[in-house]
Length: 208
Image 1 (cartoon, one colour):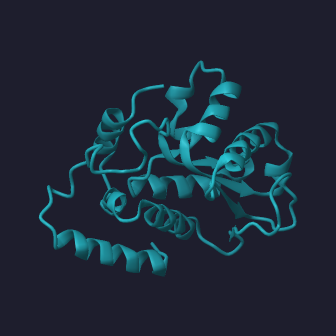
Image 2 (cartoon, one colour):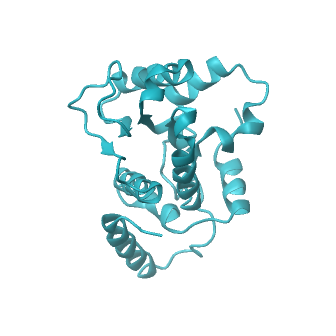
């Protein structure tokens, strides 16, 4: 699997730094105190939420899988099927994209621009972005000719036209690493088992 060169370098530096310190077994899930992804009063539950059209699922599915392998808490509908069962999705998804993630990635395509649900998710994410003093909405573009309401052409984005899903996921992990300012990167660079991820997520974040 290809890994973004910048992320690979950052990974090696972080591993070297981790080995130089006397810390608990890095294979164990970090405690809430060790992972500073949100402050104690924050309602945020996910590191990143993915907003996309069904037509683009084959690509996004691989991105979500790579992020999850790296220990990133990602909102992706197929990972949430049991949790979403029976919920009022209009209200719930608005809450997720507006209040429950550190970032939202929108996958811009012709299909994305025309779907009711993607427009709903986008509007919720844009409402959050409007109130933030940092970048919250991260565009990933399949088709640069597509116009998305409220998304300026001057907004920095990632061009997906010649980028493999795994490489794009690497860029996302690197972005989260920068946001962490050092301390929370430890659990992105040491992948958890499925059981470890579920156990840590259950202990770190109460059920909605």
